[in-house]
Image 1 (tube, rainbow, N blue to C red):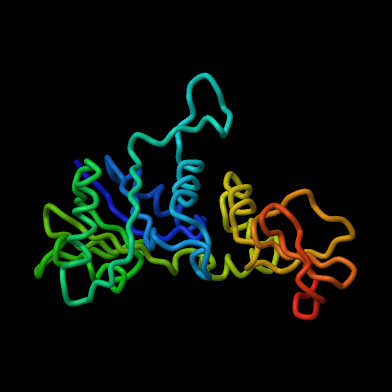
Image 2 (cartoon, rainbow, N blue to C red):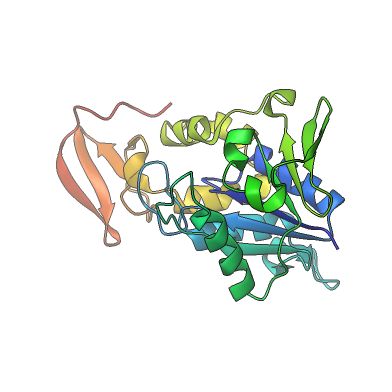
Length: 247
């Protein structure tokens, strides 16, 4: 049985992630996605909590019940497992990180991985000793490099083979309220991103009327006064001088 592992932060899930996960599902019996920096949320670079990131994966890759096609009724895939992986401050020259990841997988009663998927040898440096050791065989193609030790493998997918933008660039588009972000994020999770992206990081809304609700921290400018959605109400916080109008 082939069991694939990839670690990704999913901030948010984007088309680069979905391409990788789909490839893993095609090539393996079980796929384990470790959601990295699981302890972080509501901060720059890590806006979404881990459970919302898991919801994104379930929404895109979940299986529908036979009785309905409703997105709300998607169930987690039988072959796709998700594990929260927190940062532990491991050093590059130790096996602490890979040991932590494997122990986390075992603690959740999942099979140990045989294949690791990443985007570069730098990404894979933590996993090299466990998966391929010192004398692996390397196979190269235009799409990926496979480092094979016999029982275990590392797959390095060529990021240059697609034209996807980075998660950092996607977050910038979201924060600027530029709808182009939707081109890079699966349509099924657009509503999750809109609902849960912290409003405090996004460009202020300019409006003549107050919306009935908004994501926590959202800024709004009305008649030159800046407001913020806090504790389920719009609260004035002063004159608007630094929040340009969203386009």
